[in-house]
Length: 368
Ligand SMILES: NC(=O)c1ccc[n+]([C@@H]2O[C@H](COP(=O)([O-])OP(=O)(O)OC[C@H]3O[C@@H](n4cnc5c(N)ncnc54)[C@H](O)[C@@H]3O)[C@@H](O)[C@H]2O)c1
Image (cartoon, rainbow, N blue to C red; front, side, top):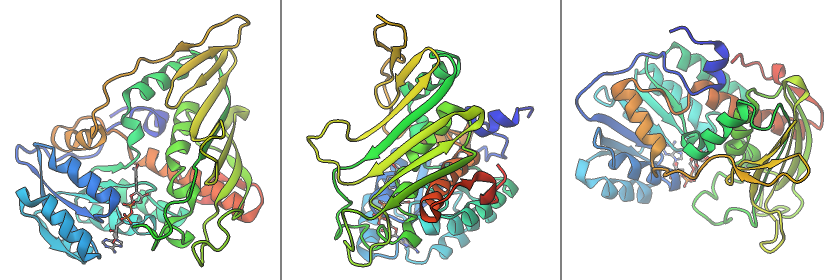
């Protein structure tokens, strides 16, 4: 396959990996059946070319709930994920455990020849991402990161038009992810989310989606970052908290393009400019990219217009595309490099905040 390296990194995810051509349903396991795992499981159950052979979780109530949800396929239940990987009849594994466990589980699954759909972030540290990249490159099976925004048609169309020059050269990006509150401290993810060694922190665990879109629209990964973060509002809440509740990071990309990103979790509901947005500024205008896709020309008198029409977005488009890739060799909805670049962009910003200094992409020690 003769693809430019750049296409492999940031273009529509290319194939290139060996694919299992089969007429039978893909025997699938879901590891981690909490919030996201239950959602993924519901998506897998809707696929005519998949069957749920196993579900796995260390929490018995979640495991029971998953087994009931998948009762039509009569899956085996496991509390030990390694037993799932040992099963030779399982061809595909969905991983939806806390971020610090993703790389180890995905590497084991890939080494056992299984196709992997791994939730974001694909790793919580640069070392985890590096090891996973190495294993996935050596594997003959498919690896898809759970960056499901890559499967949104309207967003993809808007980004394609920007990359083709709809606003001239992309010069600058301003993006944010502001929430009105923390995740519930006594909620279902409370036992790992507030521990930076397990989740990676707000930037790595949540903003990885937003940062991925920024990389996509800029057409590159950042070269360096600097920033500050801290715990300003939820001090020692919940007790022992180690993740920041706010931060501001500036990323520098090739050609001097800058991306300014803020994240925080105490934006009052009624205060304007909350939520998530990505403004992409170019030499001819700017686009309010997400979720609106509105183009605002720089010319005096220019009127805003819709850059990409709203499209029907299938609820499980990313999962459908995963199975199409496994069974028909269709293009991946997002590939290893996209998932790794997204995770590393978040890790770069996190390290810049923690070190309070400029951190370079090359310092991360992962070649993409
Ligand atoms: N793509 C998205 O939009 C999206 C949305 C939400 C969450 N996520 C990601 O999904 C992952 C899980 O998040 P969540 O909200 O479902 O959290 P959660 O706490 O609800 O679920 C995680 C599950 O993993 C289980 N688990 C922990 N260690 C395990 C182990 N060793 N073996 C088997 N199971 C284990 C837990 O018991 C829990 O049920 C995170 O990486 C998160 O970032 C992605």
